[in-house]
Amino acid sequence: MNKPPIRSNPWKYAGIASAIGMNLVVCIVLGYFIGTSLAKRTGWTPWSVIGVLGGLFTGLGSIVLMIMRILEETNE
Image 1 (cartoon, rainbow, N blue to C red):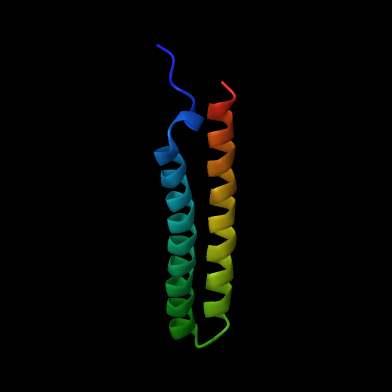
Image 2 (cartoon, rainbow, N blue to C red; image 1 turned 90 degrees about the horizontal axis):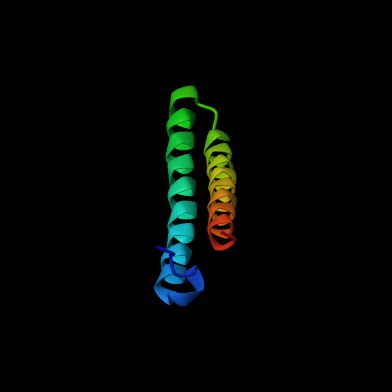
């Protein structure tokens, strides 16, 4: 049985958009908390900034992988 194309269901687009947004927010917040924890343990304050940037780049990489997977599904 053939699956209907992703274009036919606007709720899938809404789900994808919310998943992308939540993914980025969760990665940044986790990076902040990990960086803050490291800053408290080591006494070196830039860990918070490094944690946020690490979370940002991790989230962006995850978003790219998610979009690549969605594009592969639409090309089948």
